[in-house]
Length: 109
Image (tube, one colour):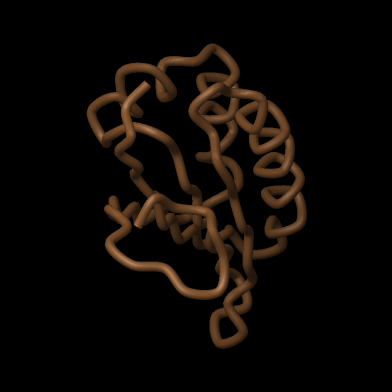
């Protein structure tokens, strides 16, 4: 297994009145993906200034390319992706590579 790590910072804007339904779908996805061999951690947060926004911060063993090839193709993700058009207005994904860490030991940085 690669010693590299990749992080995804994903901001979702829920449709009006759909935030809690989306949170449940996202939590179900996290339950599934947390059993994956390359999964390290995930944190879901509410944006205090944007009440319809949820942000997930995931850390995975591997690279962006390995994540796309190995994780994005999982069958449970297809089901999840199919529900998003009913629950969210927008999704913005940032791909990150850890280079330093303080206060925890989640990454290899």
